[in-house]
Length: 118
Image (cartoon, rainbow, N blue to C red; front, top):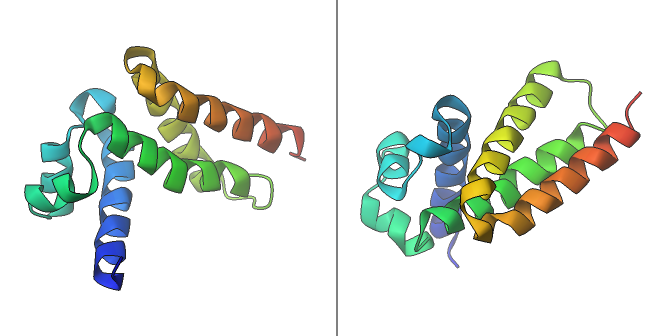
């Protein structure tokens, strides 16, 4: 993959994280992600074929590292954002069985973060 592809993917994942946290999973679809990130919808579909795939990648690439960082950092704002995203992913996993493995991973990450908390 090219650096430009990776850069746009990062932009989309950041925008997707923000969209999920601000508006919830019900407002999240690939067209909404395109609008929220100012990226053509075709570019979004080049990366993900479905809403569930996009949410799973966003959770893997943005949520799991944020939950892991909770053990090392004392940043209440980042913690609150990670927990809001976790809640959205868990709610989405209730309706989308494909998201359940990433939701389970996120819960395990949260448990590890909490067991290592001060």
